[in-house]
Image (cartoon, rainbow, N blue to C red; front, top):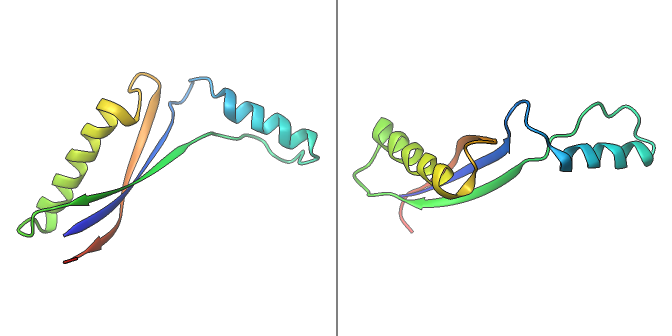
Length: 94
């Protein structure tokens, strides 16, 4: 079974977001004065191959555990980033 997961990485609350702030300033310069804030985020779509025997709650736990480990080791900096994991699709077979 193949599972698709979206992982969104974003700055933690209170951590400076210079990209978001610069984008907000640029939008204001372009006349979009009603923009109150802009937060920069990065999304990864990850496709995982699971054992056919893994189903239900065990599947969700296996996917979440694997993706959390990816976030902690590579995709995010746990000191300054938060992340959200969303399972977006499943496909059985090829």
